[in-house]
Image 1: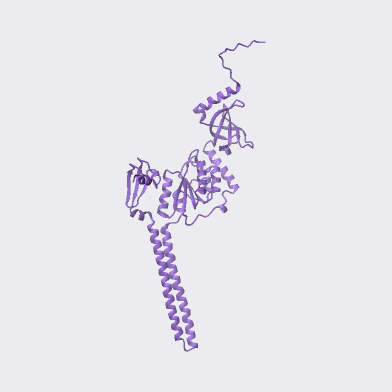
Image 2: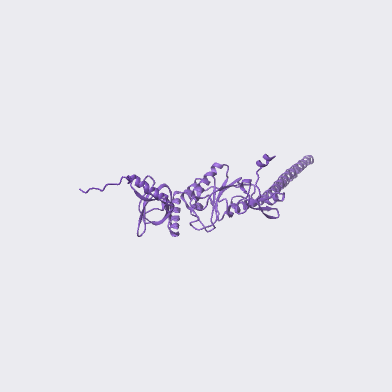
Length: 412
């Protein structure tokens, strides 16, 4: 029997669980290990009924135990032998003292892998019926409220605003802000689509962002976004990227537009085209009534001629018929004139609602440079550079002070 050395009275004795907890706290306190991105090959992959993912990430020299709980993103990219890039933090499972990487996001490693993942998801969702043309809804002819789910800054919302202001100022454009790139983009897009039902009375929505690489557009290939579009309470136009870019969102949406500007043109008619259509319908009505009266006059003349042959006294009935025809023609003419006045009044209202006519009456459009239209004082901060659109040009200005109507009332 070997005598064990005596312990110093000042020496601290730790339990196993205390040591595991100490290691865990040191690992989680490290900035590098708490925000870690790692690439490698997946092996020993397990996906039990709990929904969690267990696997080993390895390269030629080392292996790292990993776990991703069911709320993590990108589990569809995990399989034995797949090359992936994962994000997470290193910690210790104190029950066993195992060090492992706790993963919150997985994506394929490389453009080729992303393209392959895109094709696989596209095929799978198509088999489920998410792309079925029979379930796609028609867009409303005359939408009153149009939502745009996109970034609140940048050129996309400006393009949509400019096109709708020019073509169809009768509709109200509602911006639902969302990230369109990065880790939070997919979840924010899903929340934006859910907001359509909460806002209410939205007739149609545009889901939009500008062009970019396959990685930049990947949030629009996320399965959660596809299923949110599929379950949307209102029709959705997908306008993601450039004309040659295609995403899963394009295939699920009720309509795909090649660009955000094209989506704004497709979502509503042009008021000037409507004005011409109304004028055309009025002219057609006048011609139809005139033609109908002429046809009936010809038929009556023929019948009177036949009556004249068969009976000598047709002058009085003929005169009465002439009077009735004159009165009918006068009434029809008055009705046509009344409809013509209504049409002209409608044309004048449509033209008056055009942005240039509104500006000519002394109004202006204020935009924060690099941002959206400033509709309220909350959209402007002191020091912001402003771009003011007048009827004959633009003025650059700087906001020296911002006062709301409530503040002005309080000062009186």
